Length: 588
Image: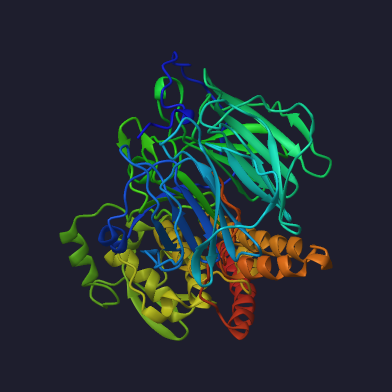
């Protein structure tokens, strides 16, 4: 079969060289990787120019080219279980192809396959196939009007009840005509536009944000492009955007995805078929390009350089799979996941260096009267300690015992407003270098917050940071504001960043639901579908070799604390803070 050259794989142009860009550091980003057992059992082929269409909590992957032949198999990936299946599908399935488009239409009940490269003629395919999702069956559409004709390396995007096809190539020529499918009348028509129309191209990338259709880059038959156009679909006016910052290098076969009002561009092939695995972000508010830098886990979990891959958006995450770079084809059963607003990275200070043999000896003297020269009285209970050992691992005790005040010589020192369990855990860490908490204590917000305050007062940074780590696992909708206030008060930076991150996720989820509620009543069916997707999973459109979809999923769930516990924590915080301030003043 003949090779699809309209993806730019035959380019032999000169290398464009390197470029510098402004770093996108608004949020913490992180790569991860997922390979399921089911993908290996199914032997899902490695292909490029296939499609991936989100449907609720699943992604439907179809077609592609493996370097020797086109495929027409359908695979389904479950976003929640992270497993693959190959369903039985009725009807006559389309011929194997690549460079086609696959778009979810009709309130999420059908996927429209359009065009692609079959490899058996001078022109691309212009045929259409519908995949009914319930029950699964291939059927022929009955649209009226004049369809786009041969389509190859094009894009097809859903804007309201209108499917817009930017044709790209037809297998021979490079085009820039725009076609529409009215999903109410089921009729095709040629879309008339004005303004600065994008020049002809194929293997470009597109994305839809509300009423705006973005087109980026591609291959025009002689060179790769890196321009960015937007179509205002309300009045059908094209505009060439001129962002600040440094635009991505010219490329084709990349993906462009809308995530929380920003466009994320990944990968693609450049001059001399050199491939990329960089992530660029276009911020429409700032009208600027940024480059994602210092992405966590990049050294071992980022995808290899590639083009012709797929990208699927699930809430704030971007799922990447498949594609190729030269003769190297990558498995589409393996997902690389970019979290564009990952939870802040947590770090824990290491305990002061001390030989293990010394620690063992020290631990034997924990709360032992032998050689003890100071006794702490906590809630009426006595804890035996040793001044010289405490000064080794706490700046607070070092200052207190050397200041000449009563703490320097008194045999007994009363500790107020701190529970016995809290002070014992702190003392145990100073003697053993280990924080030993019960399973209940690790989840007790009140206890952990008290221990964090005590660690802050007695200058034991290791314990403070450990408490921050445990507390982040218990942040929820009810306690986030209280914990944020406490984090700011005691300079618990990691806990503060995590609370701000959690609050940001809640705000985005709330804004998404508010936007969906603003859909006119005349589109109640669309609203019901979208609200379901916003609450339960992913779902939107997907296009050609650059299938992209705006999808939403539930925010990360957190373990909850009761309202009573929160009230107790707040009261304890106020009382304990006052007592700590008094104790610190006395020590000084």
